[in-house]
Image (cartoon, rainbow, N blue to C red; front, side, top):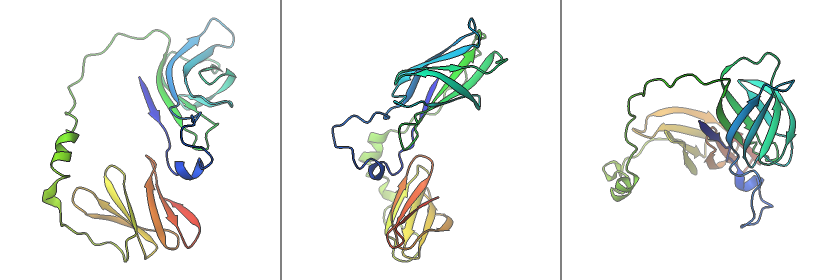
Length: 214
C-alpha cells in the first residue's frame, strides 16, 4: 500500500528560480512497486516509481538505511542488509535533489505474503464538501470572536487548529471547532505570514528577517 509525504512549506520562496510551466523534477515523488531478489549475493531490493531525482536518494527499510547500488529517476536498486528477515516493512525513499526532501513511503513484504485477514469495519463517510460550501462554511458560527494577541496579522489552518500571528511577537493556537486557546508561542519580531507545510507551522518575521518553525 502506497502512502506519500511531501513537505510543501516555503515552496514559493525556495523555488523562486522556477518559471510557471516548468516541470519540477521532484514533484510527485512516489513508489509504485518494490521487489526483493534473494537469488543474488548480497540480496537486492528494486524500487520502481517516479520522480526519484537525478542524485542518489536516501532509502530506508524498517528504519535501516540501505546502500544504493544504482539509480535513475524511476528505478532504484538498493542492497538489503545481511540476514534480512522475511516480513512486512515500511520502505521510505527521500528525493535528495529537492531542497524540500520529499518522501515516498511504501509498505513492502519480503518473502511470501500470508493469507489475507478478515475485512475490518467500514470507516465513516467522507464529508460532503459541496454541501459544506452550500452552507457557506457553517454560517451558524459566523460573528463569533476569540481573543488572541494585539494586532493579529496572519493566520493558517492545519486541519485541526487555527494559528494566528500577532503584533506581540507571538503566535496563538486556537482549536478550530470551538476556539479554545491551545497555547501561545514566541516567534521573531513582527510576524506577518503563517503557513502550514503538512507537518509544521512556519512564520515569517518581517522585522527580524527570520522564519520561525513551530
